[in-house]
Every structure is written in structure tokens, then in C-alpha cells.
Image (cartoon, rainbow, N blue to C red; front, side, top):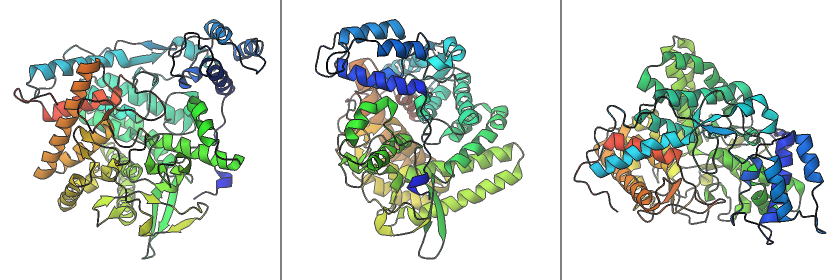
Length: 566
């Protein structure tokens, strides 16, 4: 592991730094208790770092400096509003709606097992949402990238929705699973080409397609996306094109900042990986909240450490959760880089398997052999460090506080014994789901974990107010667990998988009927309620929710006589 003093930090850009200053000024003017002059009551700092400039940064900054200010230094709301209208396009204006060329209102062979007409009509509506969510970077971003925090990607893509205007890394996997159900193979492939472009440009897939996301990645699922597209289309050219990028991504995740070595009682070393963002400042898109959260710390070094933990939790996709807190629910005890996460290592195991598969189908047998060997080592390491035979779950592992140690000695007391849906994610990977006796015991553990609720699987059992905790359930977690159970081939596992999928489909349907939109997350304690908590208002759209509903309906169907109400 790397000593804290030499941890890398990616530089910010002058544009992002300026927009952060603008964001703070806007917060003081619009949300600081004075006249908000027509601004919405909920202030979203991300809006301001997404604003495209109409003129050069120098001209815009100069105009900003010359705005009239009150005695306390704040800019009157009316003046700032006028400045924003004169010097900026609206957030999202640098993305253009695209009608995907492979979209048809009802594809041939679409959801043949969905016999219930009401559910089928809804599924067609969900399928039609791909049109609403498909975007392409506007020509202005390509011509004048210095005026935009949006990154110029080569192909069109599907965005999650609402405030998430740009492409996101791990969301894209479940978007693609839905697009494949919708027979939209070109749109799915375009998304992958954008992510490969990021690796070629930055050395890894960014959290999202913004200049302020270049300091971190997100759960590494690109190889899984390519595998699913290949299985649906047989596109060997895509596999050949992607293999060098996947090797580069694997290198990134196994670099010093992400790699941790654990020594077990038998003297064996285990190399596993953690989230670790290359950042030690407030996240530009959440700068207001981050500074407030860090105000408890007096030393700059403590603040910098805390900011790295925030950004690393964002890299995990679980932003935020008691899972990353040493003393939950105290948010200031966030210590993401001290956790070796079960799910990240499961994703990397999947990546190693996929790379071996891709190398084999493209005739590179030595690479295939190498990646099978390292995936086998990872499986053994996961069993040694994460597996808890009493709970029959894989548990996250807490590193000791002294993170500068090269090697840490394995202590089973440092496993996190709290129930999280992530404890079951290894089941999604072939080396684990193919072991039927293991699956049998894990099924029982999941049933008695307390995570299985009226409307799906809860993220955790801790009602902390954070969005990646109870009572929220998230589409990706439902899908990974259901698909892992299903692939095991065990009858009891399939029964449980179908039960979870039915509950999830019902709650998505009822919420859609109530609100007219698909939601980002759901309250699994009660059927028919969307989720809340966290640092922004609940979002709609919504990429991965749509994808998982379509994938579940394709797998399980919906009989004519099955009730869709809660």
C-alpha cells in the first residue's frame, strides 16, 4: 500500500475551479436565506459545474469579478440571475437529444413471456424511455471543449436521467442489459465505445463524462458489458477492439493506490483491491455539502483525508453508506480507503474471467491462461479474507488505521459483520455460483439476513438517512443477486430469485402508475414507494431501473393471471 504522503491527486481545470466559485456565490445569493428570486427551493450545486460558457473563461471571469456586491461580499440574487442568463447556456444544453436509429416501438420477439396485457403495455412504455434518455455531445463541445465541463465523447449514449445528464460508468451496465432486451444493439455498442475512448484518453473509465470526474472511476463493469453484447450479437470485432483497453483498465485497478496485500496465518499473501480516488478536495459537484461535512476537522491534513474518503465512496457507487463509516452513523468517520470491499473484488474477478474469455476467442491463448491463473488466485484470496463460515456470507474487511504498512496481517475480527446486500455479490460470479453446495448455504443466509423486504432487497439494515442504506433498494443490487441465484441452477435459488424479481417489478410498476416516471431507487420496506435520503432529491428517468425491469421481465415473464398490484 502507498503512504498517505505520496497519494496522487489529479489537478483540477481552471474552468472547474471557476464554476466552483460561481457555485458558492450562487448558494449565498439564492439559498442563503435571502430573496431567491425564482430559484428552486432545493439548491443543487451540480447544476453550476455543468453550465456551458457562452464566452471564453477570461471574459466570463472578468464579468463575474465586476458584478456589484453587497457589504458582506455577496452578489444580489437579481444581478447574479442576469449574469447567469447572459454568460451561460443552461446545464445540459451541450447535450442534444438523439432518436436512436435502432429503436422501434415494439421490437420483434420483445418479451415473449409477458402475457399480462397491463404489464406488457407498461413494459413497452419503459422500453420507449430509451428515446427520452439518448443523448449526443453537441458540436460546440467538440469545437470548443474549453467552454464545457462535459467531455467530448465520440458516440451517442444513454444517460441515467434528471440531474445525471451525462454518461455514468456502472449505470451503463444495467442500461445495456435493458437495451439488449429492447434489441438496441447499436446503441449498446456505442455506450461501450465511449467508455473504451475514456480508457484510451485517461487510462481508466471515469466515474462520468465530466472534467470534474477525472479523479476517480466507478465499479469496473466494462468487460461485463462487452461480454453481454458479444453473447447477444457475436460481435468479435468489438471484442478485438476492446481487449487492449480492458488490459489497461485491469492495470489501473491493480496499481499501487488500489492494491492491498494481506498476509494470512499460513504465511500466504493475498492481493486484493480497494476504492481510492485521486482527490483530496471537496468534490466540485457537491462542494457545498463536502465543505460543511468537513467543517468538524480543524487541520488541513484531516480535511484532505476526509475529502479523499468522500471521493472514494463516490468511486464505489455507494455514496453514501454506513458501510464506509468506522463509527456509523457518524458521517465524519467515513473511511472508504480502509475497506477492502467484497463487491469490488467480485467485479475484478469477473473482469479477469472475461478477459481470459476474450483472449481465448481472439486466439491469444497465453493471455487467456494468465488471466485464468490470476482469477483463481483472486478467488482464493476472497475466500481467505472475506468468507465468514458462521454467517455464510462474504464480508468487507477493515484495514488497520496505519495504512502506510506494506503488508497487513489477516485478523478475522476486522471483518465487517453488518448485513449489506454487497455481502452476496460474489454469487453473481461463475466461480461462486457454480458451486452448488456453497450456493445452498448462501441462499439460507440471504433468507435470514433481514435484507429481504416486502418490495425487494434492502441495501443494508441501518436506517442512517444515507441513500445506500435501509430502507432503500437499488436496481443493480436486485439484479446481481437475482441473476447469481438463477445461474446457480439450484431450484431453491431460482424460487428465491423469482420471488425477489416479482416484488421488484411490482414496486416499480406501482410507483410508475402513481408518478408517471421510473425512479432511481425504491423504499423496499413498502411496496409502491420510491426511495429517499442522501445529498440530493430523488431522481427519475431512470437508466438502470428501466434496464433491470426489462431484464427481469425477459427472464421471468408475467403470466396473464398474476396480480401486478402490491
